[in-house]
Image: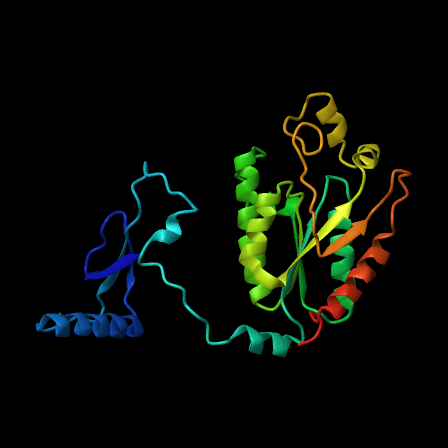
Length: 273
């Protein structure tokens, strides 16, 4: 929130600029409404006055809980002028979230990006949100404790919901090891949420070990690694279950898995509107 005052002097710790005619009219209208409520005359704003924006924020030492900030009574939901159905009809598809979950090395990102390519070739509007990529920016301040993992999934769940509500086919590739966290995202996204379980034996993931993480975890160099000293809770009723490999270690071709998912999306009506 900010308030606007006018002055001919520049003050310290504020941002001043010459007031535009449009902004002057806006301030005048707001002042007039406020004056009318009080039964007084609105103040006059001289031409050429400088605009001072004063920002109000919480004290620096005040801890803000991201889960409780929405309890504030002055935060309201604003509906856009373009509803979801109209947007989807224009895009020729229905927004959804395909949530790829599985052990590290299970092929989540590979298959998600392969599916993205298949859908893009068809003319669909699709985006992939990859766990490693998100940790370079939005979630760069999070680690791998249980609490940080929970916040990691909460944030990307909200982002994926925004994309799906905008009509995008949204592919999310996150280990997301805990059932409760995936359930929270499912509840937020609703019937647009499709859980994709990349099923593969832990032994095969260790054998593949594309990043060398399993070896490091076994050596004690990485703590809290999913599947080694931190649990992975398998989905019980995933909408889509991909058998990536059996105990023999033979991997299913990514393109075949992607094409199978395209068929599922067609059957569920997400590729048309």
